[in-house]
Length: 452
Ligand code: TYD
Ligand code: MG
Image (tube, rainbow, N blue to C red):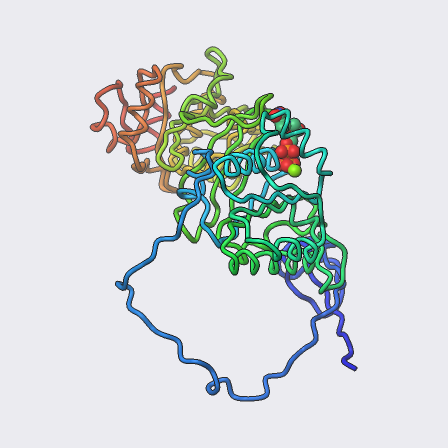
């Protein structure tokens, strides 16, 4: 009889420990270690350099069979996937609860089913009736999707193994799935991993495109999709603020395509609507001339998206450590811009609390936003508005130098098209603009002089 060893698995990052401890050594999260039975150890009895089959080694230039793509019928979804679902691949869609993952997948499932594809949608979260009601409300009630409410991976695979493998299998969500080959409650790292492994194996064998839904939880007690990321081919993140209408589907990992395109949707009463031209999406809530705001022409994938950056500085009476809070941008980057403004331009924020917000619930990742952030901060501090018809872009180096940005002409053209008349840009980009009146800068201090 083999004695089962105990081990402790961090529910946030999946790393192993031999004894329980309060904090995970790897990711630093607290109270995430949970005891799980270790799989029985096997020993390597012989030399592995013998007894295997010879594998063929080929050159990089040999012929490639491009994977077959399955269009979902939602162009924005296909765009984020890099051209549609790939047969026999596994895709993980992560996102906060309530953001619209089930809605998106139900719409994609219905559209594929209507196009004559075999589609199975398994919900472990909702009863079949609930899903049916939603489908009816979305006007998808007549789509020939095969629906089930189930949580046992064995039951699901037994059922699906009987007939022809579906073209698309949706599992909503992986945290609710349970594999009886392993101990533990659904949602623990080992359950999530084991269930996903079996489902992925089924998809690869039968050629189905598999989509797993994964909830992201803040507290780390439920296995987040992070442990799954290496098991699947594509990881998409469905983002947005629940209080805002807009949702962005972003590829984080994609074995079959780039990770630079996004899909944009708006959540409406009739489900998710595709937004083919997102450039003005995040500017809709713009106010009149207020100090502390700047418009930045971001690039998402190949498309420009204009966003408003809002900064607020609050002078503190004395002594207390001033807060810095950021929504939609990297807080480390904000600290850097503040430091450069202080060290290179003589502007002091040390007696101020600084708040930075990106409009519309948008998460900004483009490094070209630096100059727009700086101008919003300068404007907030000086209480002088950035001209309302201006866009601002440029990367800032620690030296205070304003660096060129990628796709400057595209950003400027789109800004001009949307009615902006002025642009504050790196000097290298100043020559590229015909449509707008541009001011070029090589140093951040020149922007400060320009604005004050
Ligand atoms: P849902 O797809 O259930 O989110 P998830 O699967 O990511 O948890 O969507 C939840 C929210 O979307 C819910 O709060 C209601 C809203 N919603 C709409 O606004 N319009 C709709 O047509 C649908 C179906 C949902
Ligand atoms: Mg759901």
